[in-house]
Image 1 (cartoon, rainbow, N blue to C red):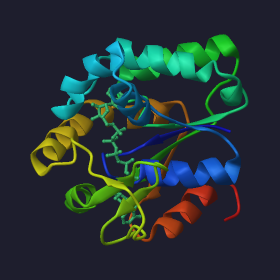
Image 2 (cartoon, rainbow, N blue to C red; image 1 turned 45 degrees about the vertical axis):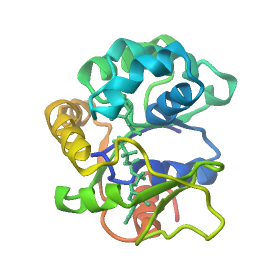
Image 3 (cartoon, rainbow, N blue to C red; image 1 turned 180 degrees about the vertical axis):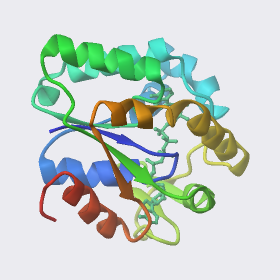
Amino acid sequence: MRLVLVGAPGSGKGTQADVLEARLKTPKVSTGDMLRAALKAGTKLGLEAKSYMDAGKLVPDSVVIGLVEERLGEPDAKNGFILDGFPRTTAQADALGALLDRLGKPLDRVVELAVPSELIVERIIHRRTDKRTGQIYHLKYSPPPPNAELEHRADDREETVNKRLADYEAMTTALLPYYQKLGLLVRVDGVGKPAEVTARVLGALGLSA
Ligand code: AP5
């Protein structure tokens, strides 16, 4: 399965990608996670990305396209992948399409997780991640266990979230008609318990829950 998850910041892409990764035995490829890992490792790329990420701005297309091309060339992604947070611009979608055409491995589906913006800010500002396992929690909806080592993302402050949402509207929503025209888009209601959303995503992919 070659899958793209599209949705606003906080719509649940990472949460669903983690579940689908285990269920479909297909690797999650998250550009946000890759950029944060590069930042933690102090690489040149991580340092270049930091100022954009902290300000809630998109990292330049050339940087993320290079990262994804490299990642999709790794052995575990040869038979499928779940892209989380990429593409985010039509230039990124064009680059992904060209890469997959070259490989003769087109996308199977693009799933939009639809969540109204009034729910997004609360989801994001109470998000916490376990820095050892990468598990995503929410202080109210998916509370972490007492032994979790919690991190609060630097870009999860309310003012940065608003900038990220504005960029999503301005740049990423263009992908919806883009993939609709290609007959790849399915829209899934992202409101409800995470397990309910997973069941809807699996249903949209023609798989049983
Ligand atoms: P990235 O890490 O991709 O962030 P994002 O797209 O803004 O998405 P989030 O990680 O904020 O949210 P999510 O949809 O994964 O939701 P989650 O499952 O965590 O990117 C970060 C930055 O990197 C960007 O701003 C940009 O600078 C850069 N970047 C990354 N990719 C790029 C690209 N392609 N091009 C350019 N720049 C790029 O859930 C959120 C919270 O809600 C959690 O607390 C979770 O527990 C909770 N939750 C999840 N599902 C539910 C539910 N059903 N009900 C209630 N709560 C829920």
